[in-house]
Image (tube, rainbow, N blue to C red; front, side, top):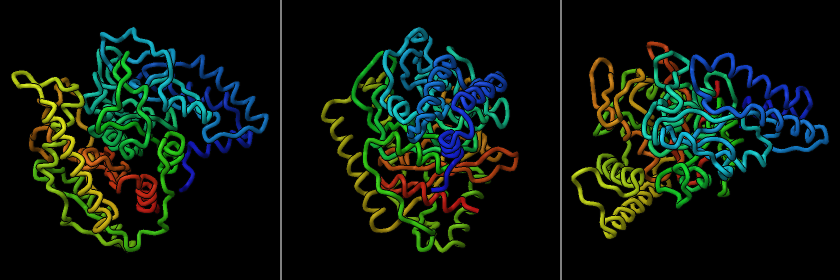
Length: 435
């Protein structure tokens, strides 16, 4: 894949064209100059970053090399960094300090990355914006007052504002993909299980990896997503094989039985479909997919069970163990249906991430929020169906910039690929977006 700006910086550092100390000081200066308007980097660790940069320069001077050696970056606030707070945006955990690095942070450090700090989230990571009582609200760098997405909203905002070149977030309901779309950057929801989750858990807890959830990279270019995934992945992933889009089989999803998209997003889908056809792909605008309405209901059922650890909504009985296993069996069967779909019919699925571009920051919670789509007020919650297309079957999905809306806000779409085809789906997105 083409080298992204993070890879270019790592190469520049290795060639001694600049020092790691200079790279870190430059990033710190950008944050200090611009973050007052955005509020993305809410936990700062600049003194330790400066010390780490000095050590990185010593390694570089000796000729040592590592994939991220000297690269300054940030990570999502919900990911543990030893010595820094992990609150998940919850006031009751404002004083919690992580004692050890999350596995992904340990992998980043081992690869030479320098962690400048942590980026903002919504409470409990349960919204598609980034506002909480501990750190306040994060604004979209493209327009103040608009959501940067969530729950990795601070992550995408820090990238879009130019503070850093690389980030790590998490995704269970579009929490990497929606911020990437809203802020005009790239994000990867990896195949479930590819990236370790240890250390990305509710403050002060250490348990099993939650079903559906993943940790994954965000960046300003697809090449840097691949660079970061190579550091983060705990599962071997095949290298991309495609050199062109010729004969690629693509399902384009423009409609969902439970929700719909704005004219801007629909136009972007058709534009990318036309580009695929121009480059020799077979594009199916009326794809034969699993029953999307049923799948979304099962996705929400499992999502809510996971998010609230089995606590039922008020007035409902808790799940029995038999019901839980039945839910997992249905989840597994749906995954197998998608596996077969990719084996027999399609190489990738092109779909929205959300039915509109960034919405105004508000105080409403997700179940009661409404969304303005082309002048019509519609319920917000069904929009999660777009994220669930990849999340429920555990598939990789890359969010990529796809132009601007009529009012000048970024549009992002997602390419969904087969299980463990993470690098291939990123390669296809690279080919699609190449000029």
